[in-house]
Length: 328
Image (tube, rainbow, N blue to C red; front, side, top):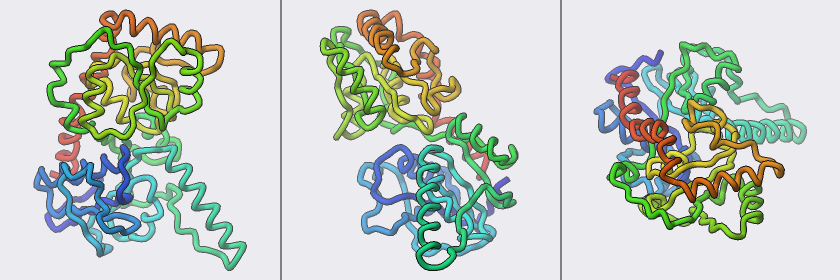
């Protein structure tokens, strides 16, 4: 596995200025390693930008680096969206953190098409992509059970895979045992960036219900909204362990979800199957009936989400334990 020395530099690659689950996980990693006193830890934003660190992540400790030496002692942590970096640093130890399997497939397909286009237009381009070749200094972190299955399907040896999951924004962990619900609040929360077609159909078929999109809010505002609400609905692709699903359960929201991506696996979304639906026009009445039942009988449903909430509330502790295991 990874060989960490006191002289090692740890460099975390990250896209600049983006405020999504993946970049937050990468900033959490920097913060936690610095807090644990793990040597030299740096962020490297690609492409390079001024003020690359999003303001939302000022709560996380980071240091930036501009030059990276290709050195066997160094450890480069690469999100799956940037696997083109693997062959750029052949001597360094590399960890690919699989935060979003679907995003990897989309970006990889785009880069391969671009390479083929340039080859036809000019001259043959060298293949600089990583295709799961068996390199002894390349390791993998699976953020979800689903991503671990994906790695195994690509013949990655088990001794090169570790399970490392991020955690929800710390603001959601405060007073999570003191939430008081207003049972008359029948609003249904959803993320308008996910499962757009499915949510649109549900809204169209339920004019009597009130649907509230979670958008243009910071973490504290999202937390306060979730703490007042009874239900969060998600029919997105969920390429990894979704942040907003975890945030919602931390605030004692019941969840109704699809079975896409990681949501299909109990290991990633620990809620009973009766709250998960294959979306189809025929199933819309069943889904809406379940939504109404949860809103009308919330106290009878919320206990079924305790296992998932307990898991989410312990993720930061588990994250820290895993990093100690790897680096200390």
